Length: 306
Image 1 (cartoon, helix red, strand yellow):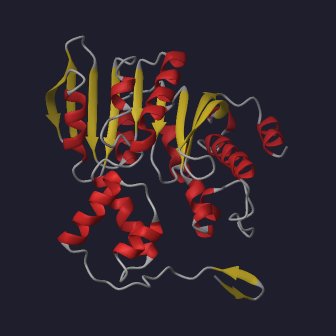
Image 2: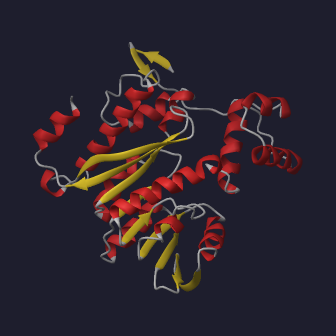
């Protein structure tokens, strides 16, 4: 970050490492390490001495997603929390915007009669299909980017192979409203939250926060962009775990309040429950909100300013 006229100015991020493609042998070594060893960037740096740490981290993230390894160490805990939320909500319809390989989808299918799911990454439909097949679903109709799965009991899962926003627009167009909007991804979904709430009109929101990684890796640019309740001129990398939790709660509340230009037609989020996935402050924070109608703009803003 540089300074200009006494104001902080960000520089464009550049690739500081070499641009060599990863060889098959390197990818095989990395994949074996990710499957059987705990993540240690220093160990990986020794295995790949000619690659920078940012380059290795980027490749690790892509491989974890591609090979369904992301969150494998806390997958059971996440499913337990999803099941706990489902037992409280008893939803009929769920929109899981970042479904991945469908590990949470099969939990929702134990309670909901219809689940809309989406993911735009290559190969995820195949992984998703295998997961729901193992839970007793069979493939049904296909229409454009939608693939339908049905169970003997009459439950339905519909997977959209594309961007979550495009899927939400189609749900809005066809008149679907959902009981639960589930935003479960390692990246921040806060910038998209107002429009997803406006399109799907959920009664409950489950959101997974990965912004703690941004603090760990000093990504102040990310934090200033997504923490909409903070002054953009102030750095956020020095926030404590508890302070960041409060800022994320404010950001969710403010995002739902901004889901419509009229307060009476917008939404308000009330925090109900939360759990840590992985180590506190270094893993992910998964939270459950109840979506209600805001009482008044003044009341909402006063609660955010406490």
